[in-house]
Length: 245
Image 1: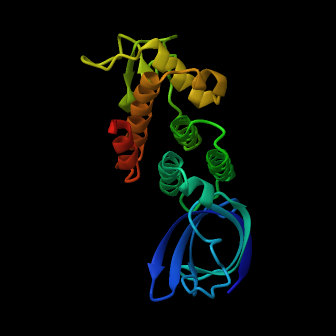
Image 2 (image 1 turned 90 degrees about the vertical axis):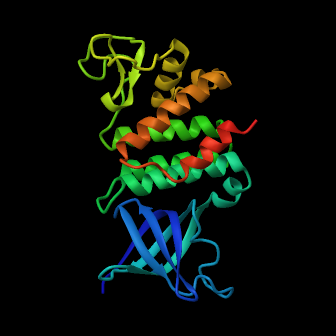
């Protein structure tokens, strides 16, 4: 079986047998990879903690019929410890890796890989508030997947905006002629924040207040769940965090 090597970020792990794990990774050149790390759960494992979620590794694998086998793994960036130490960062990172898992199938997507690594690095370094980093990542990841939202011009007919209604099923903000009866109203502050998150305008995004961030986060969550067909399991922790006094 041929050997190959790639850079990858660990998305999730599952136990296999008494000492092994199945590692799901998003790689730079080979897309999503599912591979077995043999003996990784033993204290004497040569892999150590390098194959844990949120870690970026240089990994060598044997190609298998259904699952590849990891033979070497060297750490490139250890974001896991810093992220796990902060609950808000952890919930944001969990949403990010689950989204990447759902968006990235077998095909290679260098842009999705680089976006995820950059977002995890930002969380680990606490460069921006975790909720803003999470929502910005989601909007950009969906855009790379072909579902770019519009929060200015009408998402349905293209009429110049800004517009005062938002319908996630139609792609974002919509004009009065396209808005179904009872469509939610999109206030100016929330619209500006959504545009800033999509563009990576951090100065404008960080100038927003908590109420605006909460409204924008709800829209981003609804938009993400709609396009991924079923809800993200990790998003339930975000919702409980929002409702906690």
